[in-house]
Image (cartoon, rainbow, N blue to C red; front, side):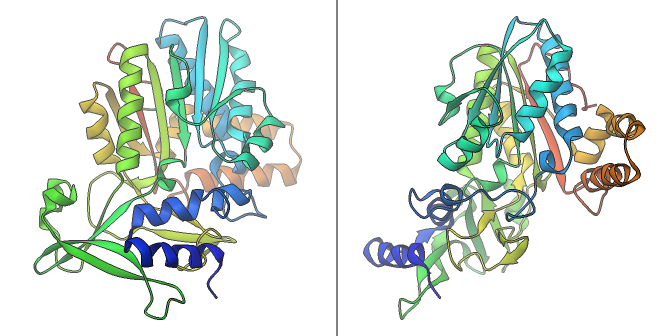
Length: 356
């Protein structure tokens, strides 16, 4: 059964034509009345998915130590802006700020980039910070930025390869107006579609994806680091090379759903093309480190050592929970391989911790 947002999108399509996948995702996730992130708290066992900070406090503690190391490499500026994109319930930032007590000479200035009123309320209940709608609203100054599972939720465009070239994949209304379906636009060259050279070898039937929103965001972050000094850490699931694949997925209640079914009621995400984002960051003047698998990144920061320390005073049940959490964060068949970490720094900084 179509929901209210689906009916609104059908009407919009009738008036203006089919939507790009990016426009569809934008409406489904951020519509001011019916958008997914506007109407619910999606995190945790009772929500639709669980992110790394919710799995174990160790994750946030290691990120906090990573920030402290970056701060030291930056020359220990007295006041450091710590910016988080898509901070969820504020769990990661809370763990980071607690860990940064190991650096008493630092005055952390936390900023959360959050547009959801519901999530902002959850964050305010947990931490003291300042909020902004975008990075442009954060005052200038030395900065370390973190973004965990943020890029995957930014809108993407999709293109389908046929015998006569590329066609943009679009969302149309069904003939009877009862719902949504896929269709294709006119023929495009690879260059007109904005696809990388690596996709010249794509075959008929392949799907390719781009994320202009992610590219613009990474470019802006890189330019700011070059201007004001600092580092950024992106952790997400995705690929280290640009290659074909339909990665758009919808999740509700920890189960996969049809992306076009009940928009606004399911989370929509897509894999991150780290190669394309790295090229964009370099073009803006930043130095790129990684991407590296999450397992290697966390191992190099000491996740197993930290787990052993926590287990010293734990009950047997707590020890099992710690082991299960570490396994989920690092095992190749869990989050260890699919998830990658990539850092950006200004050119004056050495490679940050966790990266060769």
